[in-house]
Length: 101
Image 1 (tube, rainbow, N blue to C red):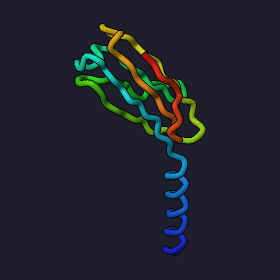
Image 2: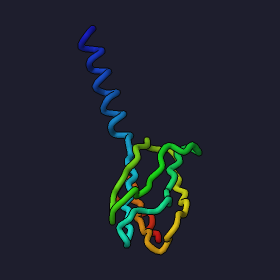
Image 3: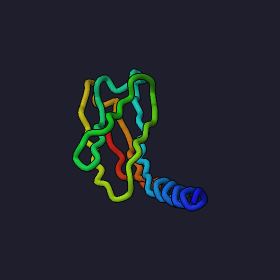
């Protein structure tokens, strides 16, 4: 019986790990002082689950975990010094969704 439970647990774990997706963002600030209040909200199925922002420095990355089949959207909120801000968002396969800024 224990072997049966272990087998089912392994199948479930492999299904969950396969169905996870990671969206990533590469963020840049040409002046090197961060995004000055700008941010990108990440929504999954209509609910904001993360807020990406570059707090300081010239560049940074972040990611968010979702699951296959979920609806993911991104909303940019400007800060000050918009001319300094650029970013790229990538899908779970590494494909470029967009180059912004």
